[in-house]
Each structure stands twice: as structure tokens, then as C-alpha cells.
Image (cartoon, rainbow, N blue to C red; front, side):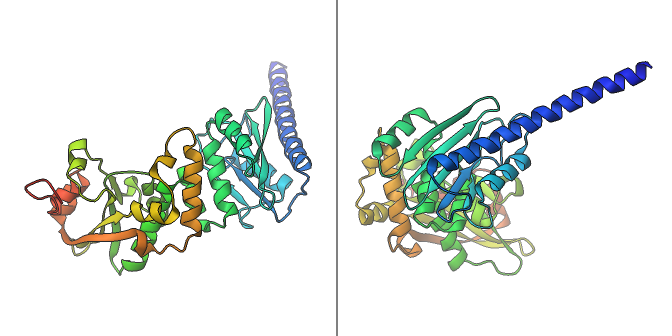
Length: 338
């Protein structure tokens, strides 16, 4: 008898849980549908693009699988149609779903923390509205930069880099150009793999990780920062690090020191470096993003090879343990210059 009562109690609790779960899911479905109504656009419209962190977060008992199934169903967008994209965030973050209508340049952001829904409109044609968005949302640049890149026909593999990096900025674009340069001019041969030593690190490294499949965990990517003193002796301010074409069976490889030419990027885009700092830095970054995407830039215009060096096992070990690559590759003179 006691066992029967105990089982019955658990059954009631399970039923309550399932009902609450169902209610939360239905509430989310309703809010997503309402967003489309407010934007006066129909489900599955070809002009609609959706950006969300739903593939990474968990809201209450709704995991990312459930969240994404609801988002796809209600918006009619999908990964396969290239009109649904994700951006990385921690699992505990609120769910964000940004609706964007390409031809109008406007949209709506729906946020949900499991208790409260919040909506915030935005318009790429109204800087005052964007400024308000920037003031009130810490993730404003994440959403604006990726949506703007999609609207400007950014390559899909670049958007995947932005997903991992959590936003799209000129620094990430520099890594995109570097990775494409490596793929074209230093393709892997049989038995080879890439090893990249980022020195100094900046946003570029996340694009290199994604496009070349290099991670610290697989010992394909190492990061080595430079002290102010070490930076002071570098004559090329665009030094981006060293990549090695390594043959494990032969225990040998080729090291290539690369530089990214920021001066060319700024000059051809007609943008002052100061535009990327201060209160309106987001707008400066977006202008540079658009220029780098739309200008007829060639990889060779922006990425240059400073030196090639034969690498043996000892040198690779020194690089992986944090040695200064520019010193190890014999680029620092006795006077300290390159």
C-alpha cells in the first residue's frame, strides 16, 4: 500500500513537470510567432534571417535540442537554408533570438531567461536606435556585427568563424585572410599537418582555429604573447605569428613567419585607426568589416611572408614551450631590431 502511494506521488510530480515543460515550450512558440507578426513578415520568408545562441544555451528544462526545434518550426529558417546561424555563449546565458529582414535593414531581438520575455527592435538605417541598443545590451556588437555581415553576403565559412568567436570584427577578418592565404600557398601534402604559433595573439586566432582545424587540445595551436619590451623591438607591427608545415614521420617541417598589413586595410578603406576606439568604435569596426568584405581585396594585398625557416624537432619543441619565435627564427638582431 505504501509503495503504491509512493509510486502515485512520483507519477503526479512527473505529470506536473511535463505540464510545466509543455507550457514553457508553448510560451516560447507563441512569442516567436508574435515577433513575426510585429515585423509583418511570414514564417519561411526568403528575406528573413535568424541569429540565435539557442544551440548553446539551456533555459529551464529546455535544452538546446528542444530550443532549436521550436525556433526552426516557428520561423521556418534552418541551417541548411543558410538563413539560421548560431553564435557561441555560455550555457547559463538567456536565450536570444534575433530576427532580421535583409531588404529593410530592421529586426527584433527576443530574449528569454525562463521567466520573462523581452523584446528590443533595431534598425541598421537608424544610428540612434543602434546607439540605444549598444547602451542597453552587452551583446549588441555580437548581434549587430554578424547580422550586418550576413546582409553584406559574407562567405558562409566566415560566418562560422564569427559563430565561434561570438562576433565579427576586423581582427577576426585578418585571421580569415591569413587562413585562406595558408590554404592556397601552403597546402598540406601527404603526411603533413599544420602547427600555428600565434604571437602576439588577437582575434585572428579563432578564425585560424576554425578554418584549419587547429586547437590547443590537439597541439595544433599555441599562443605566445609578447612583453612590451619584446614588442618594442619589432619593426613590423603586423606580425601575426608562425605556422609550421610539420611532417611527423620525418620529424621535420617548414616554418613560415607571416604579417598582416593593417596599413593597407586602413588606407584602402579610408578609415582612421582612431575610428575603432571610443564611444562609437562599433560603427568604425562595422565600416571596416564592410570594406574588407566588399572591396576587391586579395589575400596577397594583406598577408605577407617575412621569412621561411627549416624546422626540426628541437625547434618545434622550443616553439611549443613558449619560446619567442622571432628570436628562435633568428629575426632579432644584436641591436634588438628585426
